[in-house]
Every structure is written in C-alpha cells, then in structure tokens.
Image (cartoon, rainbow, N blue to C red):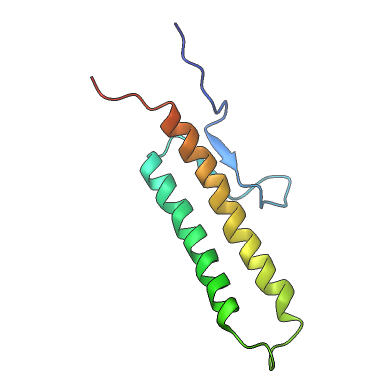
Length: 98
C-alpha cells in the first residue's frame, strides 16, 4: 500500500513571504527535531519580546515603534507556527524503527 506524502513538494514556503518566488522555505524532509527546535527558537524569541514589552514603561517611547515591534512579533510567531505545522505533520507520520 503506498503511503501518502503530506507535502507534495519537499520545500514549503513560509507564510510570511511576500514575493512571487518565496526565498524562505522549510525543508519538510529535514529532521523533525531540527524543525521543532527552529520553531521553538522563534516562538521563544517572540515570547521574550512580549515579556519585555509587558515590563516596559512607554512614557518615553515613540509611537512609530509600535508597527516595528508588531511586525517583528508577527514574523517570529508566524514562522514558528509554520515550522510547528511541518514538525507536527512529520511526527504524526513517524514510524518507530523496527
């Protein structure tokens, strides 16, 4: 019985790509542990940035910083979620060695 490949293309573009030919991709055949680690790095960085913002006083902040911060948070979080989707799919299809 043939197994279904959950990713018809080996390289999956990140959703944060805004171009016609995506320069940033996920290798869906990479080690799932490596994919998971990359996801955790991005989500951890996003969480750390949110924690820093939570603790900051914005009296002397610049209103122009808000879009910059939210854009960085979006990129980190979305890329992390894309990576988690791939890791999850890979792990759900994982077979224990015989």
